[in-house]
Image (cartoon, rainbow, N blue to C red; front, top):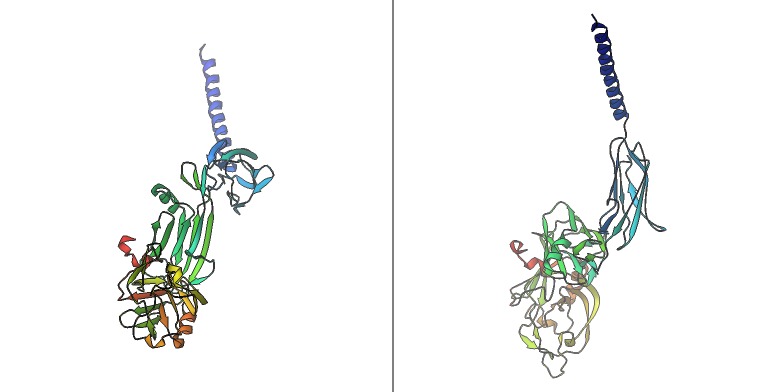
Length: 397
């Protein structure tokens, strides 16, 4: 009997505690449902040696929403984009090297209404510029129309090691409509080219992004530029010049539309004054049209023959309707002298000479990126003299 009065209160207390626990649990669930969230900022606070090419990001979790973000260095404000739902923000402006930045985030339903962090970007011991090019004489022009043989070129101002090349290519992207599987190929230590297995399809749209600024290529060495371009591919223009038959067949979208009489390289070699070997063949293989000019002045001095007594010497002269197909001086152009050789024999110094009836047609038809494919010659295109991309088998690309 003496213990019974003590048992009842203990039971009551236990019941109260259990009920209290249930109530507390209910309050916690309710708070979580109404809830708060967290704000995550990258780079982390106090981070150092941050690559300037990496964007600053802010992300909100749970019911938290970002209302504003400022990314500053002193009085300099770096631009960024806030998602419509307030769940993320990403910087779009360029960060400088070796600079301290402050990130200030204002948010609702967050653990902290205002969060401020700082970080410092890496110091570059060396930077390397790069550019997007259609060929080594012209940049790749955004919005321009090119031929089906056009390759995408990224050229670096300085040589890159194999390890640096791998990191550089990782920062390059290409998208196309229709989609094409393509690959980058290092022509040399300063130039990497992109193409697919076959020529681009007529009507294609291609976008290339070279996001190399702030990319660490090796310890302390960073890319120093970004470049972007979207280009379009026009009708398929392919001219096949037969060195043996002295004719050039012109195809538009794979349909033969014209047969042009030509006189091509006379063949043979000689030595220039500096001892270099000069080749007088029109080189075999697909040539990518580089550029064109209504008039170009040519002379043997352009390839090192300056002695007037040399049988290969010729004084400066202006030729018209000139379409350049190589860096070494091969053109499709009008020939106004010895016209009886056109369609009969090869007597040029390496160019594809055409008559007056065909020169303006070819000039108007061909555009950068079109293909002039030479067959039955005794020398072959190479990267030493032109864009030899389409001479490389896909298996070796």
